[in-house]
Length: 185
Image 1 (cartoon, rainbow, N blue to C red):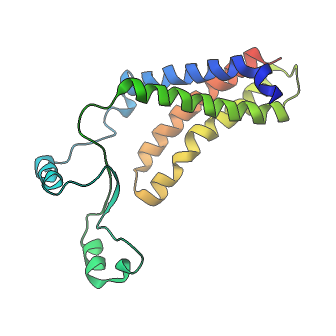
Image 2 (cartoon, rainbow, N blue to C red):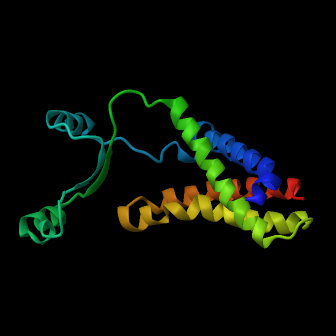
């Protein structure tokens, strides 16, 4: 854990820089603004969900409780008929933005912590800026981009959404690489 004493400043600063850039990407820049659509029959879907309320959580449509349910011809017919969906239900009301932003910042600190751990074991002290930038930037990109790859592979998230996340991750990786390169000792 000696790396924390040496790299605490780039860990925290890179987490902050990524946090603010992420906020800018979602609130100012246009590339995420049309990523989430509105169902044409939203009122009917909401009415159906409210009529038989479910606990907040993850659901599939059509749903199956176990592998045996997936062998049922009626379930298979519903699946083939479509559409299918993966649904995340949340409680009503506006999300607590302060708590969500704090969790996001803490997540960035965790990413920066692990990137610093790997960098401290692969990059020599007093390494040149570009060497630090290259390693830390790559690790940062991988951390922010590749974790969501399986959402597109398995859960139908559009590949265009993944591409936008990769763009964001590239910028985040560059911010991390630049911060660590600047403050590397």
